[in-house]
Length: 178
Image (cartoon, rainbow, N blue to C red; front, side, top):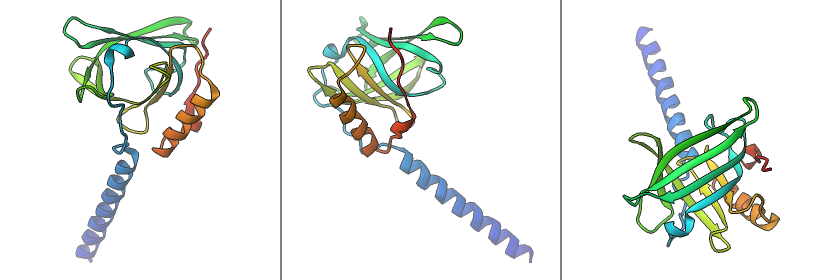
């Protein structure tokens, strides 16, 4: 009887582990192709965040922008800014980005010392005017523009592309820009 309980428990743990691993694989967007060739110098400057999958770092933010500039060591300085409409104050986060793979949109970004996250520029349109960016998994996504809005055709194209990689675009936050 005791041996049967142990076998049933081990079986349940094994099945649960397999289900967890299968779910984790499904959440990854490993099949994403990044922009190649990618010109980091053309990516520099101000981008308006048109849409995002909300994270705890951007919760309650509107008027969100990202500004990229080149550091002396050829890394990229990242300054994200947004208006917290609950606290009624500006929030700013400074970090740095580096290429993961040279001359591609495969970057890594850090806001906390030596800890980096994937930042994948998967689409650039209209001569670096619009960008679609995915994080490491389907929990992170941004639609960026050099202007405070984007044409509907660009929006629809980005949404369809994101959905094809498993992103839930119904959960996108569309921050207001004044």
